[in-house]
Amino acid sequence: MAPFILVCMTCRREYLADSVLYTCPECGNRKGTLEVVYNLPRPGNSGPDDFFQAKARKDMWRYWPLLPFAQLDADFFSVEVGPSPVTSCTRIAGKLGLSRLFLKDDGRNPSASLKDRASAVAVAKARELKMDNVYCASTGNAASSLACLSASAGLRCNVFLPATAPEAKLCQMLVFGSRVVRIDADYDEVFDISMNIGEKKGWYCRNSAINPYLLEGKKTATFELLEALDWCSPDYIFVSAGDGTILSSVYKAFMDLDSYNLVDRIPMIFGVQGIDAAVIADTFDSGPPFEPFDRKTHCVADSINVGKPRDVLKACKYTMENGGGFVRVTDEEIIASVFLLARECGVFAEPAGAAALAGLQKALSSGLVKQGASVALMITGNGLKDTKPVTNLFKQCSVLPADEERIMEELA
Ligand SMILES: Cc1ncc(COP(=O)(O)O)c(C=O)c1O
Ligand SMILES: [Zn+2]
Image (tube, rainbow, N blue to C red; front, side, top):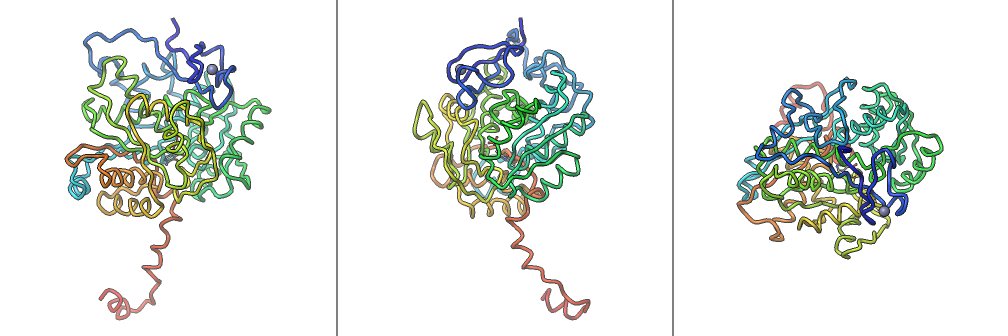
């Protein structure tokens, strides 16, 4: 029996992995997103540690029984993705009246974002299929991570991005040796252009919701979080959402574990979106069948500034099935949370990562989260990748003359 099959999110047709590359041919690219369903023997009474049987590895591949590969073959990578730290932030927990606040700092991956987990899976799939060129459209992190993981596995990488993508991310792609196509358009338009060109070129596609395996890689961040907590879930998890793949991956991690009785419960999971970029949240509020409300958006956190979210269907269906929700936050709240995380925990997150904390604060103030609860925040990217939103701080430190007295005056 195949170790997993692919099931269409709309028509529930089932496919073997070697019969379809990306999406359900009957339902098309947007509605025909595929879900990976595993065919594993039930583990009996053994716990997650026995189930994964991978104590020898520390990186994301330790969870390979719940990754979409028949064989574990990841030694060709010269970088390790995961594990990233899970830390407990007592000062912010105290300020907010929570019993515990955990940070899953996924900015501590090779290219400094959670996207490395998806890129690693995409690169491994491309190798399995003997394809030597990969491509993606990206707001920045997917491309910089695909550039990094491709370089580490000897594949050629082609990335398409909006001209507004942050400089540091662009720099990563170029240094890692990718072919970079910058386009004077927003991410949503760039995505469509990349699909047409990638198909014509015959490159392997690492685009959100088109490639069904990305989410499987991303879910290892949640596995690591739970493993660090002895497989006992916190009461709530907050994570930002752009295309909706990371959010869906948090649900999928719990759904997969739950189907093999490997976790105590599924927590309440919140997707956090910018108030002027809340396309998934608005679509969720409209109810099934979740027809997306695509539109032009704005958000200071460029990674979640997405007007045509590709994984909207999965994000909404998983949220509904598991009793989760959404919160919307302003640009000011996102930037304030960057500072709070940095100054109280020493974790410098990029705005899209810190948005999880802004979402938690919003949920606390509206009573969605109870005082005394335990909460985990998925910190999805490192702050050095997108410094523009915080460069206002430079005004606080003008350059002084080399004059000790003058410097003492300034310090007074
Ligand atoms: C740092 C960061 N956080 C969150 C997201 C949102 O992820 P998704 O598009 O899967 O919703 C992204 C996507 O680019 C990201 O780079
Ligand atoms: Zn279908």
